[in-house]
Image (cartoon, rainbow, N blue to C red; front, side):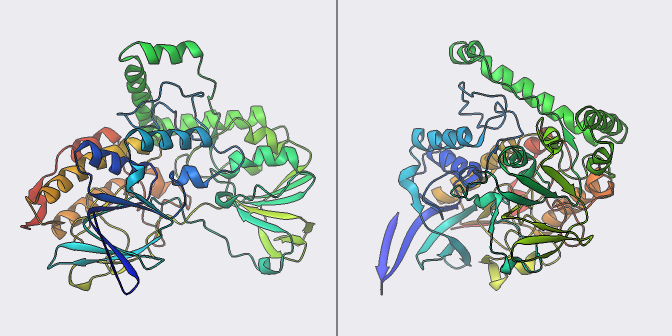
Length: 495
């Protein structure tokens, strides 16, 4: 790494620039270290590592993928306390990985990525940041993820509200909810986790639901000490348990997204509602009218019981207006509240719209993605050489662990970067026909799936109703496609 400074402006020159320190960015850094490549810089806008699992600290925050699979295969943790780890434990795991693989020395904290421009002559990326510091790298890896920019609804009059307002991803832990009248907007993955603890504290909770989610009971439990000891002392025991968990989760794809078996899963979820919700009217309100899997399927064993509480109301008429100390619903009723909490998710399909990324011939990423985000394998974009996305478009999942997908991508990207770093090649740029053929294939498969024909609107879809988020199939198929880079798919130039 070379640092230069002129006219008060700092510039760092390195081989690889990584953006983001969640599972993707941290995993990329570890893979580089394992490959013997130490000449890289990881940019992190915050003062600490962890990405999503650093930022989301709301009450009840936990993973809905079993811990055995929501971790790196090369760094398994035998000491998970629960089957589904909570936020703090996952963040500690990421911190442990950063320390073990000596990644921290490569991290530049407090550096917010704003854009990058490719220099075709020099075959380098010039990365720009909020504070004016520049980074020049031969390869640029984006590990920013999609769940980091909170999405706020446009509620009329909210700017005049005199109470407390915050998003689940920016939880105000200094605000005491005990005895307060609270309005919660949204019933997504975060809301079903924080609503139960908020309901226990609040005097009154008004929950504003637009579309009810499909919910299944969460089979969470503490992992017995005997099992942890087995994982620590018996070689291969945890790996075998992880493999079994992988195939159990992989089977969920067939069970949930198959049209015939999906109906059976819906019946089980409706049965869960009947057993858990006591009020017949409330049962009707929380029962979805669209196919299971169309939106993200959620896991919770305490959400429905929380809705039974006498201090909780579920409103489906929407928020018509926010006044100084109240919320007015679509049916004209006014409810006095002390706080408004948004559980309205994140910007996903438009997560890169605010970044100025410019590739060959001055082509902007926003122009390349004018009709929707398209990549090859969710990793590379034609016209943007040596730029690699981790967990990019159409690599998200609805049934298994995205960490598995990330690792598949890491192995693919490290193959390219190793050659770039050694000087064997100067740039790799996926061919446009290859990218186009891949996306035609993906969208054809998605067109018949429940996400597209299930009768709902979800964050999986972009503004044109096209699924730019999920991988349409089993994850082992993705693993097979990313095991080895086929350089005939790329325009390869010498250094």
